[in-house]
Length: 220
Image (cartoon, rainbow, N blue to C red; front, top):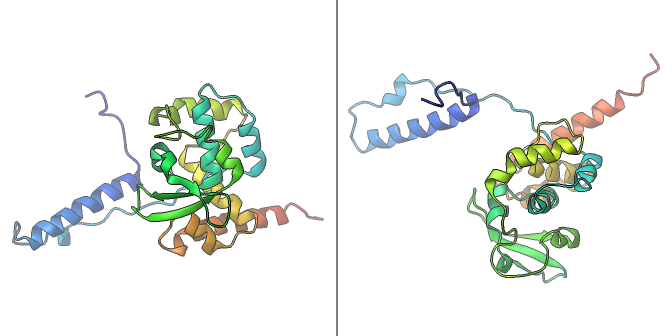
């Protein structure tokens, strides 16, 4: 009973319960139950979660801060510059990085989460983070465990007090792209979102920051 006192978040509970209800629905359709049990169940509401991200100065500071695991540092900054999820960074293979028809290089891959076939441009700076071209995994030696305490230690050593997880590097990419003028449709495609509405949250974050900045100048 080592983990008996641990609690999952409300959003995680909502996701698990939705899966459970979907299974009940299938069971009812297959006539395992005489009644649709979902009619007696209430859903678990999700809560809004603050999306943390790094501003450009923080990203530069992090990039200039030594990390005990160089491969973690390279993969993290790479995610900030490409928007790739940790699942896609972990499995990224050199054969998926190809010359682009318009010049430079691109990534042609199938995303782990959405199983979407996509081609994404990769900047020269991001490509440098991959190191010397080889065979197999691009970020060899990178493990999921490195994105836990080692990542926290590295961020703390950079003097960044925000609660940053690896997934927030994806938020950083999206928010910086919008802040620097990339249109929301293009950002949506680069994040492989199926709906632009999913990407809109990043535009809202930038607009909130603009409002916050505007309010800093006051004669009162």
